Length: 416
Picture 1: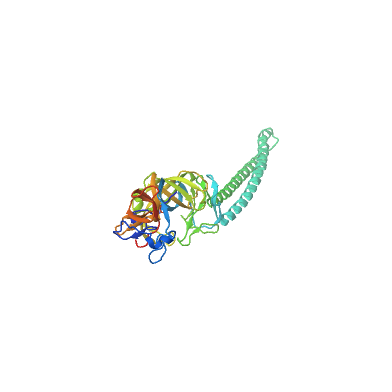
Picture 2: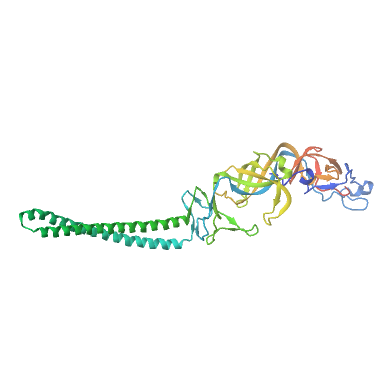
């Protein structure tokens, strides 16, 4: 498929492969035969001075007819229209990361931070829980025994008033039994209070375990949605580096992204000369540098409103070119479509069915920027103007000035 790289006005679109001829040379006739002097050398073509045929070695092409698609070729980067960003909540060191490129579901672990302090704290709290539970068990046993004692003391005391009336026990003995019963009841209340304290100790220890669990859970970042794991890149443009195990984060630092593979797009740029030729809905073909044998269909979904200087991805400096941002939607779902991958796109700007075309090398510009071709007719060469209907980096469409089958030179003849 012919492709066009930054085609614009005719002079700019044909800087490669287009030569220059003298301004008023509209027709050049080269006489090749040399008359009677060459009668005995009919097969050899030499001029009066014996030099070689001036057209020898100049390649020739025929004017052809066919369907031509003109495209703009640009490079860009894959991104996702919908994605979740996972950021650090504190200054911590990463001890584990979900593998880049892996597909995760909502709730799956993505990042674990260093948390030895909370792991030790949780272990200590669990030990306290064990001790507190043992103390609670012992307090419950003591309370059960104490209530048995209290019940015995109650029965002993409640039997004495009837005996005291019959004269079998004295009033003093009755009072001693009452005091003993009251003492046992007081002891029961004390054991019940100790049981409450033991319960409180267990609850506090368990709360401490839960607190460290929460801290540890905060140290494990989980996926907020389904997606594909893509590590964040930090550093200078000349020395970028991905987040990795062992990296120390700061609060708010981006760690990874979870793009939605069903909403991928290519972010690219077009020159201001191409702006008028690219429209919303223009078809495109996308090829990933990582998978050069694969192509994906796409279409233009956004063209920027403001021009800005193009910046080198390597040095970060302005290149002196004005460009417009363009977003191209990828009309496909594929796990190999990952944000950050480099992509090459060909944006279709025109379809030209059944047109005449020649190699771009056959087109020359005179000093008035008029398109000129050198057409061969037998031993003669004619220079004539042509009207172009567009061009790519390989071919030029001819609207008028040539006919199908005409032979044109791919280099200017001597003396032109």
